[in-house]
Length: 147
Image (cartoon, rainbow, N blue to C red; front, side, top):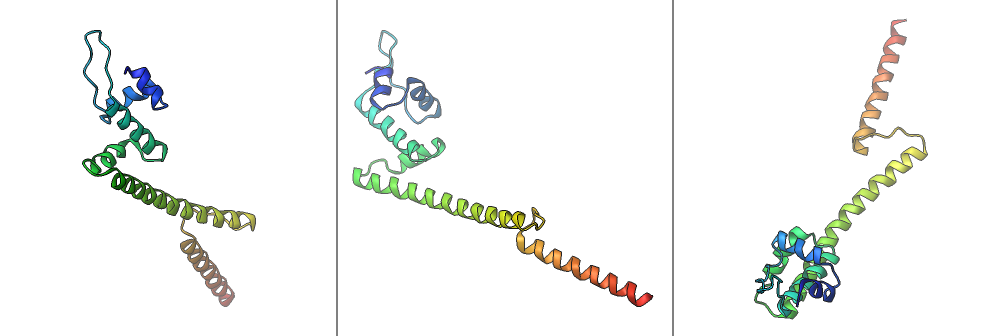
């Protein structure tokens, strides 16, 4: 099959297939005497796996690693490994998003109550605020004592 047929069967574009060639995710098949590449069923399967992983959120830079780790194993094990790797990646991303969400909630609470926002971690900012209030108190007390 030609590149347009391959791309259509995998629900992608010829441009994407060429991009995967440039990234080394797919080998370029040999050209026929007429200059066209002749793709085989194995190429379609590989392309569909690349699309499947990419659509699930695996960065293209990691697709080759996931595919090569599975080389030579049964399909069931391949799918288990793919899914395990994808879930681990999603869980790591969820942890990052949860931490980001928590920071934004604190920032929103501080902004809504009129508390000054800071790039410092909340605990450190509060400790510095407390120390600053203590320092002001000491200065005020010293001034009062001098009078």
